[in-house]
Image 1 (cartoon, rainbow, N blue to C red):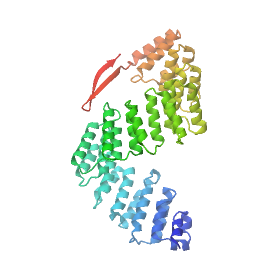
Image 2: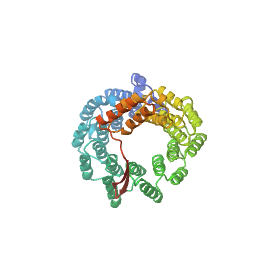
Image 3: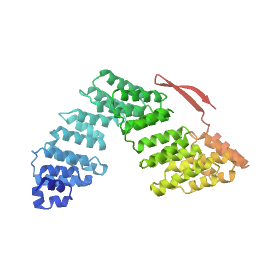
Image 4: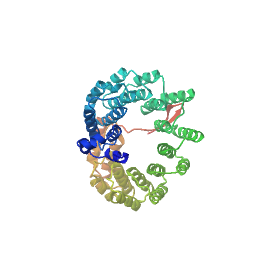
Length: 457
């Protein structure tokens, strides 16, 4: 049978491949392994591997057997099939396929996703490990609660590649231990044998996203990438735009955006959201329209950004048009953020009936943020009649330790309507639950330490 036909055979249903003797006889070991790799579902891949094992009748001496085992193990990465992993593990031990480091690494990865304890036990039994095997175990430990175990393994690893350092640094960053993560990054740079790749730079940016040094970190990483000729790929480009935009450096964000040769929806969305956040609503809307002209399809986050821009700029009809377009033209189901933007848009403009209709027609349960936005607009426009429709609902949702301002807002609205008994009831409730309105705070960050400098009553 020609090679082209073998390739086609690897993609046909299992019943056609293994239930017809003439076809099965012609299929090579390579085509069988390829069929497992390209199976239409994880379950089908396992069934194909099972049939292959039966037909092989215990022969495990060809190189494609290890490939087939690795592809079969990858199907166990999916949760519904994780229960089959011990059975596949037993077969690999019986056939000595576990002695192949790539098979052992794939088996370890499967256990790491379903049973960290099982992964650790397997890792300790693997006689010959490479950096891929150790990185798999490191990633498993880094996802757990005990970072010290991950750090112990990291320190003991004889060989570390860029993925090793990225995993350990990312683990510290994700848990808010930025000082340790940055110190580890400096250790890698001081060692000099490895250079950070775009993925590591994205990890650093993400880890510092809530700090006061975000702008400085963004500029430093951007300068490093430029100096060393690193590609500003999709993820790094999006992160740099988002960092600059969040820091208010919109010109720098636009500079990065302009230098990306092939912009996707994430790049456009980062610019639109950044412009909207800093009050450049009209520019954000213009950017959205330009994105449409470029043939880029907006996603749900893009629509959140452009609707937020319409809120800041007071573009009511434009916001309504984009909302309708999102649902009818692009087929997106509105999420809580889209509903919130529309309520905010109408409420700020004093169109409280329209805002309330959005809340009434929401398919999701409106949260306290949406209700608070609506009630604050009712207080601003002195409309108690429509506000009273949601007062008790919001009062039942308020959490004393977090929503002190909400209690005050409800009390003010009852006072606006002349409902003094209800005002007294809410105030008494605040006393009983020890509700206090949180003070606003300002911080500065010096040498990676946040310091409170002011509070506002």
